[in-house]
Length: 151
Image (cartoon, rainbow, N blue to C red; front, side, top):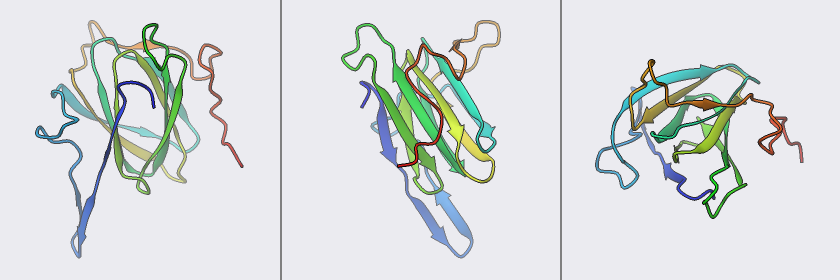
């Protein structure tokens, strides 16, 4: 696993009315601080990537559908420099993935319907000075192919 990445197993509590699932709490070991929470979606087969942040950490949860979340460690002084991690998260694997600063990340919608992702980041978005550093989704700078891997 890439240094600094943390995973929290989530648990849905169900009854005849529906489900409740806590995602991130201020008393969790994984909690750092609150910046903002936002929702993004991804259509089936669409890739959203790559980017990293210098100041904030992201906490990704997929609450509808499924995504393949991919992380790449390009940090010069990291003991896991060059590593790639794949996480499959969503309705069939309810986890939170915490993404450290300076780690590239992107995701692909892998369900038959639109996926809904919640990010609880440690900093609010600043449109005048965005903390986002991007590369194209299909760049040679990151050793990863988004195609499905049939085994």
